[in-house]
Length: 257
Image (cartoon, rainbow, N blue to C red; front, side, top):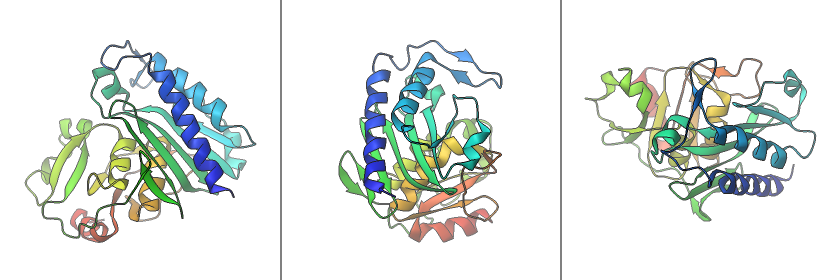
């Protein structure tokens, strides 16, 4: 496995996707609704095609929010797990908390990932054994080791639904944020201490971010207590927590997981 080649491919794909999305203006774009009610824009679909053409040049599998799932991916050794725009709601509203998200899973484990947030001018890429960079500069998760004052990035939607009410008066500093992938990447880059979601998410929401956090020295865990695995028949996970290595165990105990 040539991890440097894979990182170069991720960086190339994100660069091409960033170029493609530049013709769309965040906050000034029309959206349709998918069958489940989630928004989708022309940008989501265009970036999906750009990423697929750039990444799938070998016999790799493909899993994307914007592509009909092909069960053949289950038999693949390597699978690209992609969300062309994670945080479409924020993209539509012009809130700079969306990103293009690319993860690579090998035998069910994510080993490399990258996100590009064009509106914030941030490119965060990394892989197991190679570390993580943000705009070319090496970064790591924070060394925070106590819950008091720890910054946790929280889903705006979950906050609105009241799912974070019980944490608002606790020791954590809760900061609303958009895209799941972007929250995870921000933690990998040391821009925040932790995040968690106790509601289901899809593999494409978290694949890149999980790879980045683990490559940057942090830890992740599935809500039920096991490791996060990818390229599963059912792409939904029940929830997850993520944090720098020193904060992970205090956070897990605080949440009762």
